Structure formats: structure tokens, C-alpha cells
Image 1 (cartoon, one colour):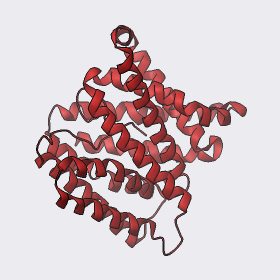
Image 2 (tube, one colour):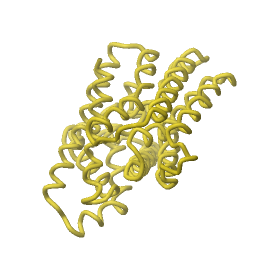
Image 3 (cartoon, helix red, strand yellow):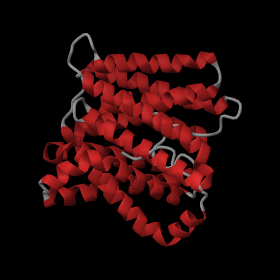
Image 4 (tube, helix red, strand yellow):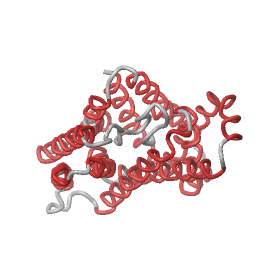
Length: 297
């Protein structure tokens, strides 16, 4: 239940954030949200973070900053995708990145079937034969998935070098700096304090509350159950879009989402069965207790 609650809060925040795209742009909303989240986490961890940073080798710190830049790119690209296509479709496209990593981690060619199933689901979601979904939104979503995959791979290499809260603080700070050139000009040019305050509130929904819920859940469930639940993320995003921003999917789009969900669950379980496949590779805030494996949107 905690994992489902975390996903619900996360995608509630994603849906609410789209309401401010017309005011400060997708990039401006992303930069504000990430910056506020970074400031909140720095305030919470600052006293213990600074000694860690001083004792961390420069190479490890540089790698952590690059990881944060990848997370910033993912969040920025996802927002640009969600500004152009339905939220559930953007999430499904982005989900292809970590799904591909999970399939690769299984080391078994037959698991490519899960990736093919997800691709079929995305094809139904985008329905290119109708021309109803803009190409730019699809490309932004796929690019976000590439950044998510890079973040997962990078986390597997440096995740053990930071505690969860310190890793997230460094990642979000780097993400805020990375997104500033894209989002800050739109906000600074004509500041709207009501919008800024509202986005600050959303920053609590993404990622702090989901992060805390997931950390608690990871103390109670195994990685297979975790990966199975996380595979439901595209469906949760679809529901959030329906309820909060009136993005009603067609029957074909709902079927496409179902295929992506089945593929995500299947790949997570296959990765668990593979030799050395105990790592989780498909989540945003804290897929291992040592460091967050996916940036929060």
C-alpha cells in the first residue's frame, strides 16, 4: 500500500504541475519544482551533508553531479512531453527506458518479448496512424526515457557511495542547476508569486513524500514485490490524468497502457530471476536503500 500511495502522490503532483505550464512554461515549472525540492532537502540534510561532501573523492562527487544532470534532463524532457501529449502516454514512453535496462539485466534473449510488448502498448497509446499525438511530444518522452535509463545505470555504479538522503540531495541540487538555463528565464522575466508558491507546494509532493513512503515500504517488502508494484506506474499516471486534468483515454489507449503495465511487471520479475538480478532498476525515488535510482518528476 505504501508503494501505491507513493505512486499516487507522485503522479498527482505530475498532473497538478501541468496546470502551470501555461503560466511559466513546462521548463519553468520543472525548474521551480526541482529547485524548491532541492532547497527543502538541503535544509533537512545540510548539517550531515557537508562533512560527507568534504570527505567524498572528487571523482565520486563529479559522477554524482553528472547523475543529477541526467535526472534534471529526464524531468525537463518529461515535462515538455506532458505539455504536448497526455500524461499517461508521456509516462509510458518514459517507462521504456528503465524497462529496457531491466530486460538487458535479465541476460536472457527471450525477455526481449517484454520490450516488444511494451512497444506494442506504446504504439496503441500514440496511434500514429491517426495523427492525434504530436511527434514532438513522443520524441520528448522517448528522450526522457533515455535519461532515466542512464540515471539507473549510473546509480548502480555510484549508489553505494552515498546514503539515500545525501544522494537525493546532491542529485536534486545538480538537477536544479542543470535545468536553470532552460526554466529560470521564463520565471524571472515575469515572476508570478502565486504560481511560484503553488509550485513550491507541489515540490513536497514530488519527491519528498513519495521518497519517504518508499523508504518505509522498502523495509517491509522484497524487491520482486517492489518491482511488480512499480510496473503499475503507467496505469497510475493514466488515472491521475483522468481524475485531475480530465485527460480521458480512448479504449485503444487504455489497452496500450495495460500492455505497458504487463511488460513492466514481467520484466521486473524476470530481472529478479536472472543471475545477479537482485537490483531494482525501475523506480524514481529510492530503489535501493543506499541511493535513489530514479529522479522524481
